[in-house]
Amino acid sequence: MRTAVEKTKNGIAKQIVPLAMALASSYTAGSAMGMLLQLYLKYLGASHILIGMGTSARSLGSVLGGVVMGRLSDRFPHKFLLLSAMGLGVVGIVGLALLPPASLAIGAGFLRAFAGAGLAAVAMALISSLSSARNRGRNLSYITASRSAGLMFGKLAAGALLGWLGFRGSFSSLALLPLFGLAVLLPLPHAQIERDHTRRAGFRLLLESGFLPLFVGALLRQMGTTGFFAFIYVYMAELGISPGTMGALAALNHAVQVVGMLLFGRISDAIGRRAVFLTGFGLSVLVPLVFAISRDPLGIGLGFALLGIAFSSLYIGSTAHLGDRVPIERQGEILGLFDSSRALGGMFGPLLSGALATPFGLKGAFLAMAGVSALGFASVLFCRGPRGAARSG
Image 1 (cartoon, rainbow, N blue to C red):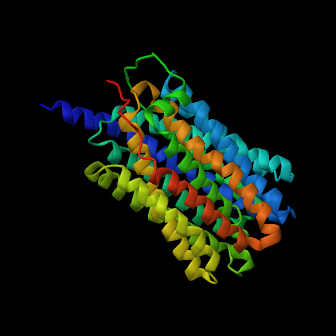
Image 2: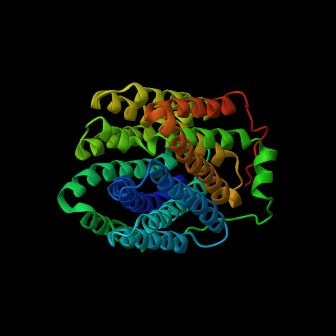
């Protein structure tokens, strides 16, 4: 006869497996789309500012997707929201297959980013709510690793697809992936989660629990990261790196993330969350510096590998930390807000680096982004909150 612990593990596994497959397919499509959209805008002759706006629009979509879908996941059935988000992702990528002008292409990228962030927020909230402090890091690592795997496959696929099929064929092929995700999610079992519907405003909860410095640090770190990432493919093109090599180098980041998420998830369960996420914030300062001094694919590859280590430790440590202390009935909203705070930084980073790139060049902009990331590290390093556990139940 199975024990209660075994039944609980099997129940969570029935949720994790389809969610991981759906997220991998969604993020493969979104990752490839992000690289292709940046190159598509360059193909259309868009300026650095307009290319940066494309990344900012996708970051705005991520902000709204995390906030809206995360909040809804605390009130409505998870499965319905997951299917809705995946469907919106299909619409966004199909819109790009029509090869629209720059303004509409940016809008399609926004819609796809909204869907992807919403899907991730609902999935993270569901798994965190079903987990305990002893296994939350490990369980969340499966979800975050699947996202990173999708991002890796997307980068690898983008360069190959563009060379074989051109922009229209590439976008059309990518639209098939979220359709697969829809099919995987259809048999997802309904999860019974008990909630206390006594609520405090999300921002008030951040202040009272001492989470705000972590959110500010995540915003600034992401501002620095997306600030250089908005132009990394243009930068690699200026160094004479081919599209296929670009995809392989960028995929290295996500390959490291897959291993890093699984590893740091277990480490955070064993030694605590703070040491893990501080490592990620600290390493994030070094990443744009490595890119700024790189002259060849070897240096770029080193930068992407370091980025993978930094993000995996930062993200799994932070989300497990929040999951430990946030009440079950607020998991979706707070985890969604965390992703949205990062995405908000992603809105402003490309605009700042785009403005700096004109007078100072891309390398100068990369150095400025290292300074912004350092401010994010200082925010979490010198502000130890939260002052007390907020978790209920």
